[in-house]
Amino acid sequence: MLLIVACSQMNELQPQGGIIITDQMQETNSIIPSRADASFNGMFTKLGAPGSVTGGTRPDDFGFIMMAFSNDIEAADVVLANSGYNWFSTCGALTSRNADYANPYLRYAAPYNTIAAANDIIKSYPADSGDEQIRYKLAQARAIRAFAYLNLAPYFQFGYIAGGQNLPCVPLVTEETTDFTNNPRASVEDVYALIISDLDYAIENLEGYVRTDKARIDRQVAYGLRARAYLNMQEWAKAASDAALAAEGFTPASMAEVSRPSFYDISEHNWIWGYDMTTDAAMFNPYATSSAWIRSFSGDGYSAGTQVYSCINSLLYDKIPETDVRKGWWVTPALESPLLENVTWNGVTGNAVGPLTIDNVKMAFLPYTNVKFGMTTVGGTLNDEDWPFMRVEEMILIQAEGLAKSGSEGAARELLENFVRNYRDPAYSSEASGRSIEDEIWYQRRVELWGEGFSNSDTRRLGKPLVRFHGGTDSNVPEAFRFNMTADDGWWLMRFTSSEMNTNLAITDNTGGTQPVQDQNPGLRDGVTD
Image (cartoon, rainbow, N blue to C red; front, top):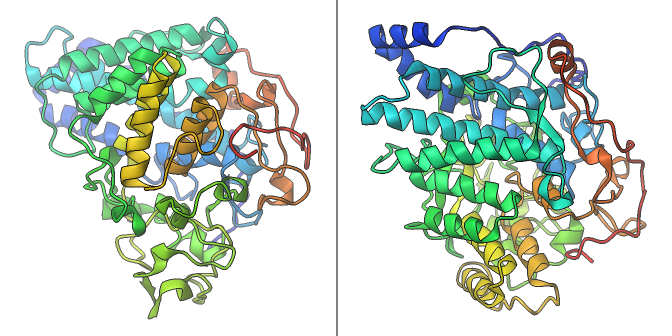
């Protein structure tokens, strides 16, 4: 029922281009306002739509949601089977540094297509417009552009952790860029300067804006994005301050709420910003959705249908206390979880869902399969579940990290303990594990934000090694993906696609590191899963 298709050769696909001068765009928009509105709405729709880059039927093409999934698989905590149905095996094996492979092409093209869409919006209206509705659109376009660069910068250069602010990162493309064939890589510092500038503008100009739904960007989302940027820049106090502003008015999901499969509805009160997947968008290609890949309850998806479940690395799972409600976000080796208590699939309820097999629909769960991400209807086939781009829990953890690293460890521990004790583990103590406060916050991020796209960039910005196993067969990572890598290994850095190298003659590629091999560096430890 599901196709196995070779997914290596993508060089024939070219990014969408075209140049139209600013005066023409502004004149057109003044005559046909609906055209400008359609472009603005499309900028948000493309963030997670199936076929957002290729416009086709590839099941691994679903925008920034796909990028989050890929980035997590490249790190240590999300484990997929080494199977012919696993379209993301290149991430598990870290062969994603091949310039002709589909996966890195999609992860490069999606942000730059979004940047192009944002630039078109910015060019569509006079910068000095006195119309507040136009100002709100310009602010959101610049925030979207910053979001896109935040999904590029951490993966093409090591950044601030290695003192590499002056090292080349990615090309900057703004509304003023005209020479696309001679556009060299900007420095890390310059990329983040543009990100901060865009978010400063967004925060200033979104004052008073009340969004109609959480798929749009308001001032608090912009604060949250700037908090992420400051975290990457090691501006700890600024990150903490912005995270607190982003979190205002939002409360974390309660223990009861995360004691069942969830994280699928944009109306969930702890979501600050999300992707609102419509049924029409999902059905364009239901296999190119988070429901098909990350959720374990789809009646028409790769995850359940081919047993390519998204599982947690057992090294991290084993560190979660039994008193923590999040332990149930994944099934045990016996395929059991308290989150399955009220789940019914095909007439089967509770832990019997784990080993349940339905021909052409569901195979038995694997040990450590996630049941964190739920479905509107268990066994449903619409695959129109939403996706969280930003949750209040993330902002609390950014605030804690910013406080800890700016000299306020006591306040950081109090904030962290209040969150975890009240919403996740009533027996929690930030000192019980013996970890440093920095590693304890990283541990909490790895558990709380598992599967949401932060694992790779966190590992990188913290200067941590990639640790998938401790030697022997002590983790559930498949043999082909079982390796560790030092924090400074040049293989961390993404390579530029062939299409970019062939059209932008000023690009110099990343070349460091070597392809990891099975069982390399068994002695590496990360401070969390030790």
